[in-house]
Image 1 (cartoon, rainbow, N blue to C red):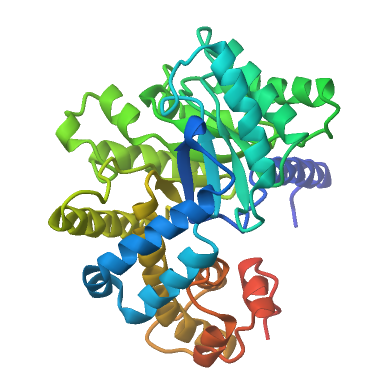
Image 2 (tube, one colour):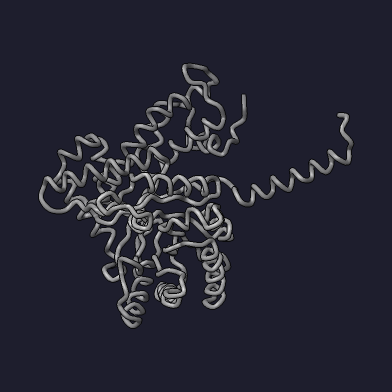
Length: 404
């Protein structure tokens, strides 16, 4: 090289700083994302809620077997029924915000203590559990903090998989406030440092694009000191704030697609999960109304999965049926497409599609997501790609597989 050594040394030092900064802010994707979050009013919850929702979902699946079979197929529906019987809810959030309302301090204090007791008593099949507090705004912060503390008191600490959702985010500073709140609660309650994590609910246009034109949600993630575990899209508050007429508010409206695309880009490779919102159409009423709601939710879940949103809200036990059915059908289809390409990649063969390491990483990731949610077993994978064991798939996902 003809360049001066002092320049090269300075260049190397600066690039190391840049790499370290990127590694700190974008450490990579985090495995283990649940397929859904069930939102339930905290006043209505019991420790038996997973079993109650599972039984109700099974009942709907039996009553509407034919349309569900037409949507997902016999094999998928059989797997869905097994899941609903044993593991219907992966993630549960007891709601103290819009779904709860303002009931007075005495009642909310009592419900918060009871919510903590319920969360600590849930079975291990509910991998994540927590609450949605009221907003960290000047009007609601005191009640939000009071509820969070009482939930932890009722639980006797931080339940396994606990997270609290912060709604009505409009400024990145609210994420910084949430961090400070976590630190103070941990100190006051004798909890381990870093024990509390939160989700940010994106339901305001200001959470997507700030007054300065920047992506507020991206700044919020990086103001969260590693405590932000997810971004949740709020379908109807966001649509209303954008002026969308109620009959057109949905997960597939263009304003929803834009907001979620910004959320997705902001969260990419940070380890923060993106969760789609809910549908307000419940599978209740006459058979034709239920069939229409089932088909609609199946389509919406499939659409979200196709766009890379692997988690969404469920607001009714019947939504579990189509959540699991659409998810299983999606990942089984993904396996059929991905496994032959992984097999060719591992064999270093060509073919009509020649994949690079980044694409092999994506192929392995989608197969591992399907395994994690139970869409198929490891034997189904190796039947299509004999060398694609779980260990090898993890190496591909982490891009640690040696190049032969």
